[in-house]
Length: 402
Image 1 (cartoon, rainbow, N blue to C red):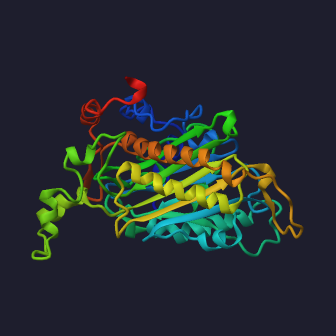
Image 2 (tube, rainbow, N blue to C red; image 1 turned 180 degrees about the vertical axis):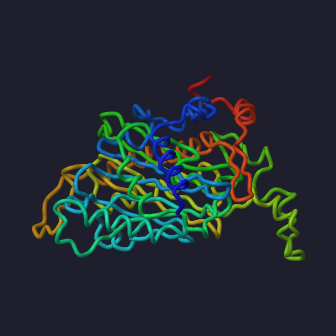
Image 3 (tube, helix red, strand yellow; image 1 turned 135 degrees about the vertical axis):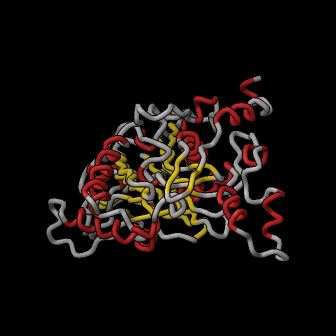
């Protein structure tokens, strides 16, 4: 990679630590009075509201072709390999690549940072995470590392075949991880993403349960790159604006009588595909084992339905969940079963509700924070805020607002 691209990548890595002051301000969901659910968000309304969780991002934008990046999620600030966290994966539709998921499924633990990037960068990201883990003090004798790397395909806006994400970019994202606010929209692994026919990207949200339900925190981060018929807080945004794959003027193009499309039709269809993928990372400080975490991850996938996801044939929908509870950590090489306090099965429903709410809001934040982007000869528009505001006003009032 040329020196100029490396410099651009470094600059954008710094910018993604916080929202760039140079960017035109875009609202989050709550700025539009969109407050899904009944539980309150945490202080930052981000996955980093879960104590110990850190997020780092590297945004790679260069020339007129490269629009991609890396997002790293670290469950705690110690040696993750030596102090593994309980984890689980739930698959909604498996048209995607979540490397390392089978060992998580088998052993119920996560031992590396969780990395999100683009489809063709998964291999390089895995290699980078393995190197990072081997280099950690105390890991001198480690001979097996299960790197956990997920992806979505940003090949519309990004020259994905150029494979511009390098190991150094992944390491930069990991080293940049911090517990503060999380930049959203066109950043990190969400740089080249598209969602519901508009510009997508990274989104996050959190919920804090009342003490009577345990007082636990739940945080969600999404890499939104999927399609469907967008609904925001009950308002039929996608239907009203005709931005979905099943609109009347789009459906005729998929008639079995006419299976070919010319270049003009193909361009028109770009923003109206139901295909794509969504990676979801769920964090909680509730003491949960892998069984309950898998149930929690499932609710994150279910939460996508609230936004209008089609879970289409070409969509890879994955959720990764982990607990940061120190009591639930698993020391590497432990041979004695440790009795750990965990949330009883019958007490899980409030956590399920929190994940549903946070996932829904995280998707909205990804869309609302994203800005119009041109790359690789393609322009993807940001969702029109004024139109969203207009359509939200037409909602039926909720009980709390009457």
